[in-house]
Amino acid sequence: MKPDAKTTPGRGLSFPDWAVALRADDSLSPGLRESYRRTLVDFLKFCQQRRAGATVVLAREYVELARLEQAPAPARLQEWKDGLNWFFHRGHEASSAALRGVPPLARSDLGRTDWEQRLVARLRLKSVSWRTEQTYRGWAWRLALRTEQAYLEWIRRFIFFDRKKHPKNMGVAIGFVICREH
Image (cartoon, rainbow, N blue to C red; front, side, top):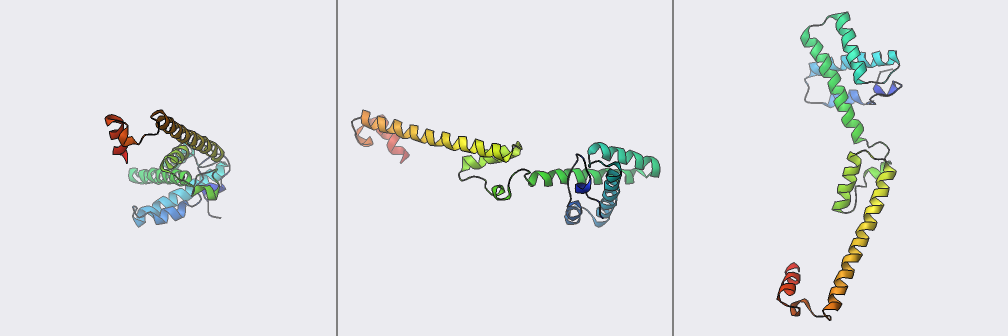
């Protein structure tokens, strides 16, 4: 069984597709990719032996133990650290992209209007639960509807206040402002 972050119990980074992501990373040379792969396989085995998830604390402990046991050259030690940093950075990117807690169909629902899309993006950036997101979206739509109704009521009152005159006949200042917007 190939070790991955998902098979390790306890709290830690869950990045089961790390090997696929590593192979697909074109920013790394083939030799560096292989070095990272070996480091990560050994690190995840180390996590399994400890019965713990892949955490930064365990990564530091792994590097320190491997340094004491193997006494690698400084360049090799830096490769290990870079490989573990790659794992945690890419793993966090992958887990944030997965939108935990959001049902699969809701992941594509980013909102109907620009303001709703901005609201959804901000809520997902703050990692609120899907139900909380739905609640906030409902509140925002009710507020938007009430605001629109209030504007329409103000316009209606304004028209009746000026005895249903056409904006061009209301006077210089008001007629200019209203006609300029159309």
